[in-house]
Length: 196
Image (cartoon, rainbow, N blue to C red; front, side, top):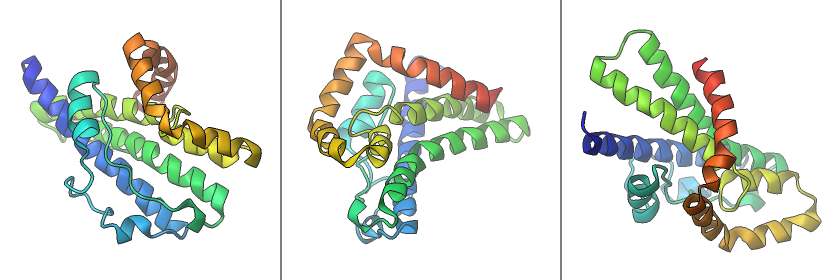
């Protein structure tokens, strides 16, 4: 397969994966008492309500990682709130790791054709990368919500203040190559656990 075909495959995989990621946030929020995502029509695998032109289309082509429009969650509705916040945040990355395991399972059972095995293989690596990337504790990534859930209340306001600057920080990390330095060690650990 040529590079353009592989890039298109990667974008399709990423769109599917970020949709699953966001739906998982919404479903977990519902389990803890918040139905905001359901009311907004975001508990669906239809990609249209989730697609963000920059995060879902442009970013995958430019930097190989993508994002969907965040599913709305009202953390005030979660009970218990701190545990709910942590579980809602972790649901997204864990769904990506689950997809990677599912894709690997299909390949190892010999259920995939040669072409499908290539697609699923790329899906394994992309989902592990997506899950690990989202665990970085920089707003608005999921890792920051996990940090927020365990932080003392006196820290929470300061963490939330970074929300508006987080995307800029992430762009700088990508452009300087520091993002790979941060992500690579955890990526290798998760990859070894899932793939063996």
